[in-house]
Structures are given as C-alpha cells and as structure tokens.
Length: 110
Length: 116
Image (cartoon, rainbow over all chains, first blue to last red; front, side):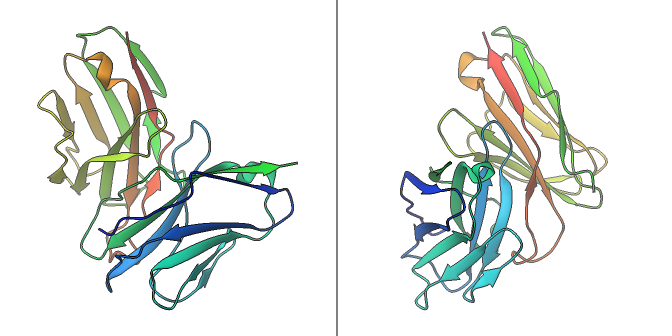
C-alpha cells in the first residue's frame, strides 16, 4: 500500500472550512483514498473514500488531484466536535487491512 | 444498526494474567478485524476473519495472542501471560463482504487494557 504524508497538526476557527491535506505520491491505479477520524478515546470513524473522482457526503468532501498524488479532506463548517485526529489511508483493491499513519491532529477553536 | 460493540471497555490486570476481550460486529457483516493502538500512534492491524476463517495474522500477533470467531458472528481476542507492553487500546472493526470500494470498516469503541 502507498505511503501517505500528513501534517502533524492544524487548527481552524469554528464555522470555517477545515482543509486537511494528504500526500500520496506513490499511489497506484487500483488504490483508493480513505479518510477516518478518531475523537479522543473513541474508535476510528469512517468519513469518506474515493478513487479518482471528487466525492461528497453528509460529513465531508474529498478532493483528489488529477494525478492522484494528493488529496484534501474538506469539512465545510467545522464545529468543536470535529476536533480529532484525521487519518488519510491508501488502500489497494486486494488489501483488507487499513494501514494507519500518525494522522493530523485538528483543533477547532471557538 | 447498533454498531460494533466491544466488552469490556476497560480492563486492568496484573502481569502474567490472561485476559479475553469480546467483539460483536454489525449484524450481517461477515468480515471482522482486530487492531491495536498504543498511546500517540495510529491503530495497527492484528488479524482478520472472513466468517469463521482467520485469513491473515500480523507479525505483531505473538504466540501469546489468539483470536477466534467460532460461529462467524462474535469474536474473542485472548492474551495469555500478559506483559506491560501489551497495554494498549484493542479495537475491533467489521465490514460487509464486497470490493474495496464497498468494504468500509466500521470500528467499535475499543477495549483499553492496562497491565500493571
């Protein structure tokens, strides 16, 4: 599975958009980009995933660059409850396991 | 949909004791996963079941660890002769059978183990 690189921490103001970047320059054609988050002392929570098209659901939007070497998770209107560690994971078609890195610690400020 | 449940939520034990954790997956999910997470790190994969068959085990799963899923529903993870290095959060996840596009894993709240 391709390696991902994320900034260790970020912050944003409540009500503003949070844009979390992820670099996956070695991604191959059959690998999906998954995002999870983990609020303190809870299990990871699935957010969204995509292959090459941009995706949106009720939680977030995922923007994948045309060359697929990077992506951005967008929380359109961050709330204090969005404070968590966000993990970007690249997962290939035949792989069942998720390989977590260190993630980005997002702090949403009041 | 009641989600993935894990019991107990917390376990404190003395070094050398055996412990067992239970995971109940989302009903009709036939894939079940165990992960371990130490403080400040992301979760690490331990093992994976499809129905009752254990299909993959990480090298992290030493011979003191054993996992079972006898009827393809709930699973147990047992640690024998616990060591202080086993202190961690043990996470269970389940997913429906499908391609990686649909095989989204949903996690339980975890069992936090403290070995004194």
